[in-house]
Image (cartoon, one colour):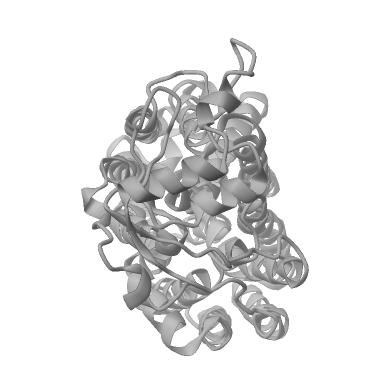
Length: 481
């Protein structure tokens, strides 16, 4: 494997001699179709995308170019299958557990609020804390993965999640205990699991990266749906304490063996080899807009799944109906994670799909949710918001690969997660404070309106910044970006 440091001019000259230009590819497309600006063959696309380059607009039809210096890695090859499917499925199972439990917190929150353990804002803060740690500890967790490997770090994370759930069975009357176990143990464990798995399927796939990342992310939505229904049923049958213990033992029984299936595919060269001359991610204008978009949308991201069961009770729906709506939201999220990955890969591109996902979620919260005073309109909101939020989550990894380069995906994701940690922590509790300020859950649907507009407006503001990412790379409308 030869790696030669080259300048932008020599890179472009070498590539232009070996492949048809992007212009020649797009010129054959219909006038009003999304046209791809990648090279004609998959091998050529792989060759270009393997450079850790900083994208920029270069010419009328190009959405990326090599700036500064890049490293040739001609012998690098992604398996595009094989054991990669095992790793993708194992990552899916782990996300099913550690993210599924997080996304089903709304069912437990509704139960605790009904028992008058604490106000909705405090209980939402516990759920926000379990979402805060995976984001806040993303960079330290990725360092542990780099030092010890995916498998042992994932095992440690699943152990913390399982033990935290099990011990929570003895803390159902203790707010501090739930902060430590549900917020701390699940949050730290979730961070270790997330950074062990989020980019792992991408090390086996290049052309299908959006697809496998979407499939992995769908584990969170499907897990949230299953755990929402199962948790409500278990609470009804055996009570909340034994529900926590049962869930914890299930995580340990199925999660730990799955961790041993994890194994990375294509690994980057040593950092000293590919970081020479590489610009900071903060010198990339597109990444700055992406980071700002993710920071803003982190505030409303967990509000719908945390408050849906409680809202259902406020409009006189049964606890079972509330759990079913929470499950429906998570199923829609799973569909969005997978579906937007397919749309990104085969139609409009990663960043355009990202914008569409945010617009869908924002309009659902801003327009449909305030009108949802019965089950029918609420189901429509659940579908729109769930699919949009799922698409947002699943497209972060391929977008970082697209605008930063394959070898800097973990760096980009680390900064996106770190940037969103405050929003994950404070966003749900802010919605809870707005709810309490306007009468609380006993005041009916009208008390939720300010929180609804807060969720919708911040999501749409994030979509505007995502649109800035898209037009930073290409100002042409009908181009796959």
